[in-house]
Each structure stands twice: as C-alpha cells, then as structure tokens.
Length: 215
Image (tube, rainbow, N blue to C red):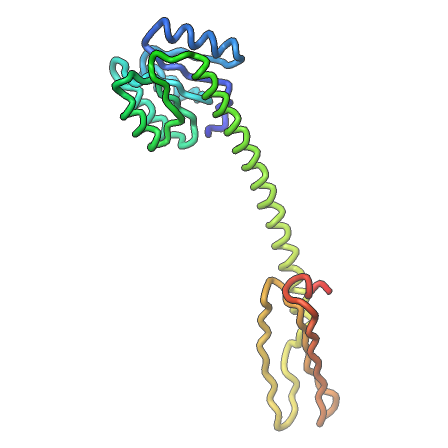
C-alpha cells in the first residue's frame, strides 16, 4: 500500500448522486475523510497525485467503467482495498474481479452500513499487516546481527585450528574440518613435540552446532 495512504481516506466513485451523498455522509460520521467522484476518469486524474486508503467504485458509469478503474488501481498498488458497487446483472463480473484482487462487492440497493463494515474489516486487516511487516523487519535485523556475531565467532574458532601440518619425516598429515552449522562443537590440533614425536588432540563436545561450540 502506498506510504502516504492512510486507511481513513476514502475515494468514493459513484454517479448516483443520492447514493453517493448518503454513503459519504455515513462514512464521514464514522470518522473517515471522503472524496466524491461522479466519474472514474475524474478519480484517476486525482489518484495520480493523491492516493487514498480505500477505493469504493460503482461498476457501471459513463465513460471509463469501475472495472477499468479497478484494474488501473490494481496495476499501481496490489494491496489497496477496492470495493465494487454492482447491479444485480454485474454479480458474475464482480466475482471475477474478486479473483483478480478486489476486496469485496456490494449489490444495489445496499445498506450503507454494509459498506462501513467492509471498510472496518479492511482497516483492521491492514493494521495487522503493517504490524506483521514491522515485526518481520525487526526479526530480519535481529537475524542479521546474529549472522554477524556467528561469523565473528567462526573466525575465532578458525584461529584455534592448526594452520598447517607439522613436518615429520616419513609421516604426512591431512585433515578436513567441516562444521555442521555456522559453528561446530569439535576442535582438534596437531603439533610437533620434537624431531621424532608429534602431539595431537580431538575435542568432541557433547551436542552439535552452535550451542556445543559455545561450550
């Protein structure tokens, strides 16, 4: 949804003057800011510069239809709630629009409180989506910090591993160390004691992965 589009701003596109007036009055009494349009083209001209939080549009209007308006809005914003107002003969079309991302549709004649209820539901869902997006962003930041800390810990662990094999006549040493996670819980070393002896150890910490490595 567009950043400058609070849910309480509604674009109502309806060429039936009486229905538009009564619906707008109800929404205003409920605390919404309503902008009325009697043509879809007029709404599009304004939407280019002033994005609302919800679009409510009649399906059949002179000139550009409400369906064309819906499709244009959906191209620009995949999440903006669009409620369609239809006649009985447009129900199948409205159902197709639901499949394309319309929020809901109301069939004329409808009781304006029905529209208010739909907008309240959209308001609640969008608030929950915003809250979820905020939590996801916070989890992403925490995960990034954790990844950074684990990378630093892995560097420290690597510094404790042998850098090169000791040179002992007649004996070759080789190894592969592959941690099962960002960090491994095992440690080893190989080191010369004198010209004929070599020391080595392997530490196998109980458990696996990062918790074992931290022990």
